[in-house]
Image (cartoon, rainbow, N blue to C red; front, side, top):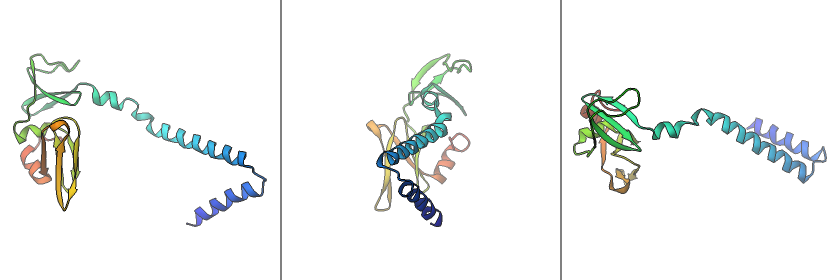
Length: 161
């Protein structure tokens, strides 16, 4: 609190006692805005390729399944996956998420009070209403709402966590 008062008094003094005009104040504010923008850009510079990395074809060799994710859609590879380019040597079949165990291969979308909301692809709408956690997939994509303990029992070493 004391630091804030000192900073405020310093700014006030510098503009009132030095004859600062509205233009000087605008210049100072503009420079501050530029400084903040530069700091944010610098902080986020390591994330430049994040989206392209996420949207690229992803290979996951998990337990007994060969899974490829393309643009958020899960495919099972009935063959082997090339470590060079991520291609499947056999047939690619879109994963149907027919059993709870299929969700072990998906990323957990949200965690609310130790409940995991997992979608077969795309985003989810989740939250708590009257103490009850809900989980809905966008565009009617299948979802699984499962407690942390049940997830660990179901997925064991295979799960993403």
